[in-house]
Image (cartoon, rainbow, N blue to C red; front, side, top):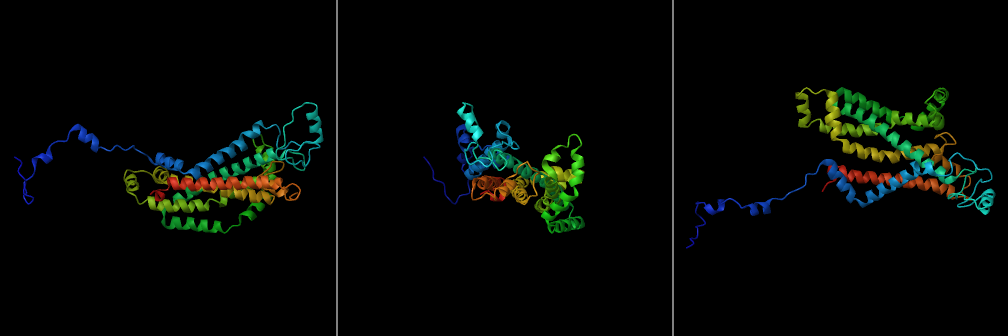
Length: 348
């Protein structure tokens, strides 16, 4: 006979302490996959449809800019006599004769420029130049800015005050003026250096582009330095930094192995967002004539040269302008997606 227990009694029920069976244990265990920082971030990134679409567009543009020119039948500097200022899908008289004779002639999808150069390949190479400048400049900004900001944030005190005042001074320097001055000062030294074996690429870029890279390295890292400094000042208060100091780790090792490593997500996002800014700066300066040396094309220089024939051949301006637009938009959306995926504050 079951005896009901008095609810006010302090006597324990022995049946409540019977060991659980194997089936009961299995039903209560909830297995969860171990997910690290990078795996979780990329999983969140793949769920962002806009960011994935932007990433796909960036990959397509990189294929068009870096791979297609190697197989394109025309070279960006090749001048075809009698093919000056052709419109979209137009052929010169010589090419028409060749087609009538049964020869195969590759079409000019965007026509040709005033010098008879295929405009499609010039736009593709111009995109390659602009993207290369943007990526290389962003890497320079990442390296210089992260090291400078990490040192200032880690040591703090007078060191931080002096280093940040230098950053404030660099913020006030006009970059366009420095590029013009450096281009004039470095013109003859760079010409002499280009004659040295292994430095022929300087001739293709020209003093303006080399000066632009120098300005990126000298001035544009200050924003990155401030971001990294703020991150380091928060991270250095954590217990693992104190433990590393107690174990005798040097300051350089702590900055490299513990602090910068733990803000790598922020660095990736900031660098990705810096790429479109660098591309826009390069295109703007090339539009003003401060870009690469002719005949090397740039999207900005192509847009500048197309202004004279805007009413007659508007596609000559719209093609490089649209390429600039789609590159900058794609990198901005990609950077926003990476920020949403890797920023812990954005997690729900």
